[in-house]
Length: 317
Image 1 (cartoon, one colour):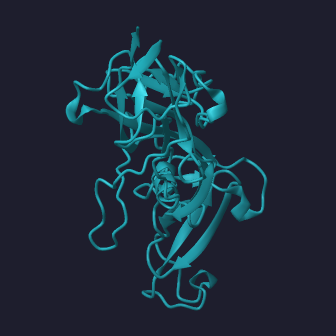
Image 2 (tube, helix red, strand yellow; image 1 turned 30 degrees about the horizontal axis):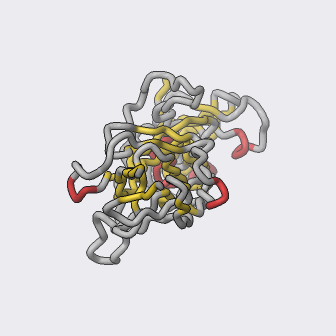
């Protein structure tokens, strides 16, 4: 005769010592760590890693830096070549302005009052500038009320990409895990634990795309989750490059095909007698614009939960 004894209710779809226990998919409802006092919105910190990390062994693009703030845009002139791309922000012909798509320098001396370069204005009302494009060898005179803005001190493409990222409302995944959190559900040492991103969407897993403009630069950025690192609370970290497979009772005692773990000790010795489980999303953001492309690596979107793992004792009489 076999009998199962355990100090806690077991809620798994496993058969132990001939006894079938009930099961269902499990979800984690965690509390926000910090909220905006004005709006009540949950605040999540995104940490950008070192701008030039070592190449990723899995083949993902590494972070590619800031890009150049000054660039040539042939579409503004209705030409196709040379192609869009970065240019030096200063040259012998002056300073580069993205807005005017040329090197700017004040005309000296200024033309006489009746010169058409004044475009109907009088000397002292603004000034006339040279606008030189080395790409087309075009030199024209322009009038401007104030000095045309130089782009050398403006935002870089990466800065504009960060603005686009801010529009994406990226969030941590909603945790799915079996055994599910809560005092009425307990896992068993040696039995498979399943982890997954519950109902992933564009904001929690990607892909999601947004565009932003600043300083004469327009950037389009697309973000997607590269991987989720699960800290299981027992000193083990599991890296899952897929959202994971939601558990179904029909899977029985099978391990997860793409994102799982097996505990070898119970959580009885842990604070609150539970394992603290953390899921950290690592995002890849690929941006393009201003004749340039780049990649930003983001992490720090975190969701936490707690699960209980006990030891099943089998008595044989």
